Image 1 (cartoon, protein in one colour):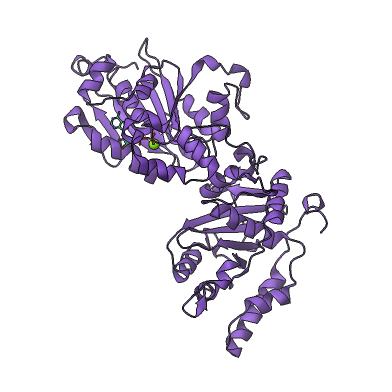
Image 2 (tube, protein in one colour):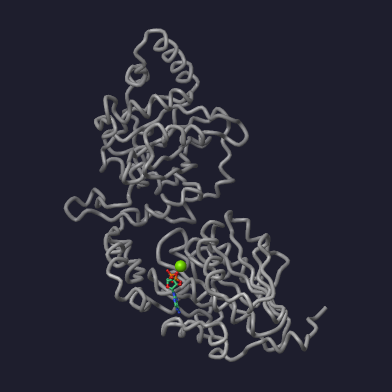
Length: 493
Ligand SMILES: Nc1ncnc2c1ncn2[C@@H]1O[C@H](COP(=O)(O)OP(=O)(O)O)[C@@H](O)[C@H]1O
Ligand SMILES: [Mg+2]
């Protein structure tokens, strides 16, 4: 069944881009104009933060929706909160009510006066893209494209279709460098080469792809905003160059050059742990800086999976303990049996009032039936090396819900003063916390159980101490020590 041309709807179509802009009171900046004028099948806009990528993507979808009556367009962001805070907010704020027929709040679909639609959607999980299986779109726009996987992109290209003769279905992405999709996005648009893992690399046609590079300087609103530039200027070096200037090759001097999202991340829903799977938690304590918390487990093949993440600042030790307890729940098996909690050593020294951060946190954790924290092994060089070797040997995978860690790892650079170490910078709390988790738990030279127990069971009254000791040893005997293949054990151990 073809689309029936509807005369009354057709008159509300707008082909002329300048006319469209006038009607929608949209005045694109120079670089945005370049993006709108590109006739490449797959466009990528941006590079840096702030040039108006999101806004341009929204107006491109609206413009495309006005080319023909009764066609559909789709705008995607990885998660709903992000979608709502960006594209939907701009739509509500900037598009006058009389310019659309209706907005379906539940489905997030705008129907324009010509009967065409723009749907705002998100893909939390890898498989969420299959929701659009039956649909056909004239235009699909993905905001923050590097948050998506190549597979999601490839599937969506198959939904690009229009039954109107002469129409040119197209897709566009807007993004900063970095994140899980960095490699494939860089390959297709920046290096102009097939992406690793592409289904049919021989069919890659660079002519289909155009990269419109914009930096923050391309948004006149920010060009003079020193405050915003200052904030960006305070980011870690790699992120600053990526966000401020949109550089894609900032990851030179990168520490974790082995890390590849396709290889080292798995979908959160694929992490299936048994109730008895050994699990442990690592925490990098922070208050002004966020506290970063990771949950790890040893899988049947001896490899480690980091399967949950919690990163937040301004939580008291008690609140952090509660947040950890609340999350230490397995969907199938209920409350998780956590073997160890490794905490940044400085939290044992820092005191507020009488008790150290570690003691206060420990009280909260113990009250929820979790172990008290032990000081994490803070051997930086050894820790980074262990993580590197684990990645190299495919003995460490990260679930894709640990987005901060996945974002953080590729940005770590070598410290020029000590090339074995990474350069310390703001924002590396996720990597530090993960390092504590891997180094403390996997180091074959770690303390025997009774020493650990004595350190950990810090309850003072004899009765509760006895109960804790008993509980600890019961857990300890049940636990299976992680099996480390010889070849990636750190040298000399
Ligand atoms: N053409 C434009 N006219 C007016 N304001 C714009 C325009 N393009 C972007 N902006 C504003 O500039 C700010 C940054 O734009 P945004 O699209 O969020 O940038 P990015 O996605 O590149 O970070 C937003 O407040 C947006 O409304
Ligand atoms: Mg944006």
